[in-house]
Length: 637
View 1 (tube, rainbow, N blue to C red):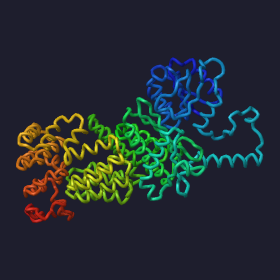
View 2 (view 1 turned 180 degrees about the vertical axis):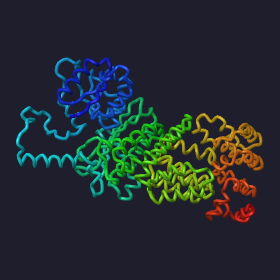
View 3 (view 1 turned 45 degrees about the vertical axis):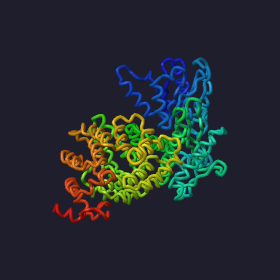
View 4 (view 1 turned 30 degrees about the vertical axis):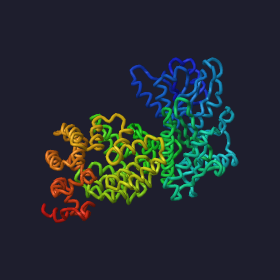
């Protein structure tokens, strides 16, 4: 029988208590907060009970809708794939929980027989799975449970049933073990024209994924889907006059069991943003389902956790790495050989370190990261994420070592866009701009639904001085992302430095000090330029990477080469090295043409890298460069 966690608001104890009694009479063990003894740590006890529960029953009522505790407990049940929602008083479940079938107990106030008890017991049974010796019938009489001489036919039937159960639920999800090409259906959840349009949009966008082109799965719409596809995406447009809303669920095509769900909610007018985020998240979840399949599969409860973690990581404002780490750690504890969860756990841990830098608690986050890396390395020594994190801890001047490690990671995982995205940044640091463009193109091919990937390609082209190619990619983005915040960000990024200053003003919001920069770009009169540079000079003496980078870009933009060299001389080498990628952009053309640039290159280790690797920066091949890079570098022997 099941271990049940019952979540409710204290005002509803008159309903919760008879519910618990009914469940216990059915043979289940029920935990609710009457079991917390005086002096116990309240939240810790709840966490322990949630961890131990096979099913989390949540009683939605007019009282519990406003309870933070109930919502938190419901979220835990949802994220762990254990949620069984009930409702009383005619309320609907809150946003985030409406994709689950809720058992409506009507106006029941706790007196008399529990309404819809059979439905509740079946739901608990489905969440917890059959117990070791449980027969398939929900009602078991004393006669049925009395010892009896086993019959051969009965034993054979039990064995056959057990095999069926193991194939369907006891081991890894059966779809993940099939050898045939998995079929993914994309369909509307209802017949409304808006939902039909949302499904059509999602179908088209998912069709751009590299995995579809490589034949790793077959994407079909509702009209051409087989009777039982492997996976089913169902989407519904729930938008109203005030909000842009949509719901997306992923179902097991074998039995329509829920594998993952997500509700999207944005202010009115941001429908395009909602569609873009919906397709990006769906693509990430689908890719994770494929990874799970290729890695041997997961039991359904762990698969739900894994897909949920993947969807959170897909968010453009992913800011809960610790929560995701906890979910992924649950998976690797149960299935230590499942490499995809280890990879994302390491990456989420690294995100937690980045967040900790802002909070000033880096040592604790780093300790957790190192501990997880050590465990992962014992089981999966070739995990690409281990290499990526190793790169992040290298000093700024370790250009060659970083690039060698990127090549190593790419050889292990040529389909991971993150590898090429980070590699592109290091290639820019050493002046290999054409190679950086190739890396950015690779990212855009591998991750076509990601605005960040396309924006990186646009800006890498611009940073290399290929403005027309950058405009071509930007025009393509305008067609694909019309009306989205992602497009506005791309337009702002390009036009801030390389396009029309007036377009940058349109999309820049509160520009602050950048207004003076755009004034100087639009009208580079001595007065406008000096106003901007006077603001830049206020930052002299501050050595932070961001401040330093913004300052030297301003000086380079308006050809203050002598002042730029003086600024660099006064700045620590590690800060200068961390901003070396700026020095190969178009604004620094005059700076690079001055042989003194080689002094800077020597100081921050670039000459050592160029000479040892033989990979000289692209600018050295410019026909009108007033010096020979190799001859000038030889002066520093």
